[in-house]
Length: 247
Length: 299
Image (cartoon, rainbow over all chains, first blue to last red; front, side):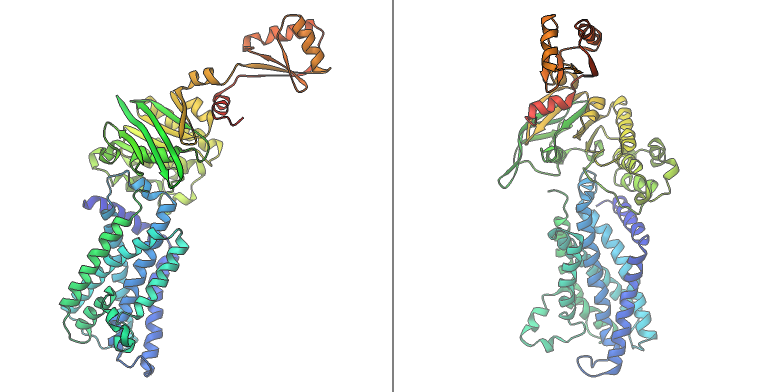
């Protein structure tokens, strides 16, 4: 991998993103709406949401960590194929892994920023009690970046397999929302009964556990972070391979 | 030296044969045009030659190597219907594509934008450029690595005449500088103006290849003078023929085949001498389009 090429691709993507006001707005407003809604529901107590506010912090982060790369990467890949951008890039020295790494960098930065906003809102408005030490912040940031890399890979796989941008968004949401609620984020796996073991196969489960382990539950984060990294490495490699560099 | 070579290239998609044993070669510094209608196999051939598609059979070579082993810095491709990131400006787009190549291989982005006549639009986003400016910018991003071989896949399809002229001017400049250009198009006028040699492709097969003028001379037929007579064309044809000037009837018109431009006066003198009145005269020199239509049996 060559840093200058990754920087060039990331810089172009970053500039393009900043010039889409709607994309910037919704990237940050959706998580804020989510926090506001759930904070109100959790604050009211009862039902599925009996845990304290801090318990759901990992779920709020999981929302942006999963859905942002899935929808952005899948639509970017579908659009790039329609606009013949990959056909052009395939004849330059840029490699598939470098392209995906550049988009991981951009999406990772966006998700980190959105995560900081969520943290701020949850603590100040939701009144959540979180353990925000240098270690917990560093581990959470690492989990966000590692998970983003993997879900960017999944987004690339979706973008490769659908025929249009609209289809990419639809499939991303169709995959993302069930995964979000099955990944030990807002609903405990105990509630799922016989389906609970399958939760272990979802990378987002390990993201949730790593983040919750350092910010709320004082549990271990090393194993879930390591499992998450393994999942992400696999999906990053698969996503890079799937990019439509060739017919 | 041959810069681009295809040897028996065949590409199939299921039962569909996109390329059927294509062989050709392009010399250094040549502008080579590949002409054919939509679906003839032009884009598939470009993809096989540039490594973005694998041929089912046969071999492609680019700068003497298989396409996927060629030094990318020496080759550039402008794919058909390519559209770069639409919210970036010409400066940013040329800089972006330049950043993908080693520094020593790239041209100065500012100078390239100026050279393409985009100085006044350098701060304008791609989406807001005119059709001609977009076309020139797409060529510009393809020149940022100063390629030895440039593939242009239908670069003027769907743009207005002014934009087409702009692109033609760029290609002419590149040709003058010695860049090898592989151009696909279905505009015959584009070929006649730009190409040293032309290959005609139909249903995945090359039906003729050669110097553009030679292909026209060989396949397009003779120039002809067409006269619309005031009276019956059949009578006029008999009168003229009896005077020794060969003419045939096509509908309600007289046609003199093989009349060069300097023979028009003689033909009209023959009509005047025979007291044949006419109200319209047309002379037409067949071009590449006629050659193509004859070769592909589309007329």
